[in-house]
Amino acid sequence: MMDKYLSVGLICLLTAGCTMRQAGYTALGAGAGGGIGYSLHHDGKEAAIGGLAGALTGNLAAQWQDKAEKTKHDKVYQEGYKQARVDVAVHDWETNTGKDLAKREPKRLVSVMIPKREENNVIYDSQEVTVEDYR
Image (tube, rainbow, N blue to C red; front, top):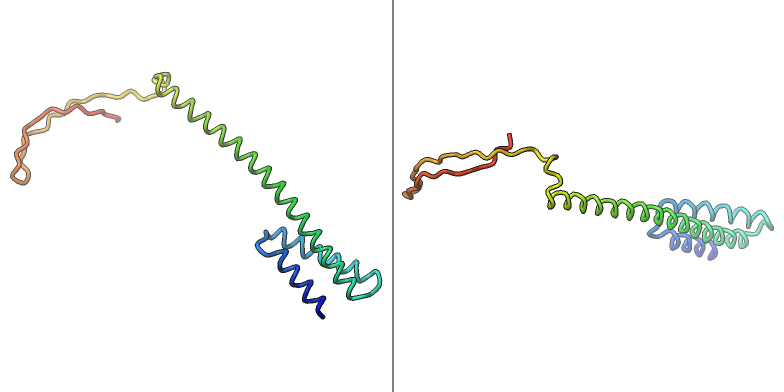
């Protein structure tokens, strides 16, 4: 009876904080190991030992697969990050050197006369203001 609780406790520890893949591989390994252990001599202790060994093997296989997948995703992320930095550098270079003037929309400067007005007992004189027109 103690072996049963020990194996369940170890499986719980192995799968705590794991991904679904790790939990699935651990459970599959435990089932396969327990079945193989029991089929050898039809003994419960050997089934428990086989289940523990299978759970450990399944968990290690899942961790290895997760690490390989994470490494692949990290590599792709770094490549995208480097390309984004290059794109930003090229854009900044073109903007700051004026090479993108042909791409920019021409802007129009428009002079607007603001009339004399009074707000809250403050008198504002009329003035001419130049603004950019992006229509």
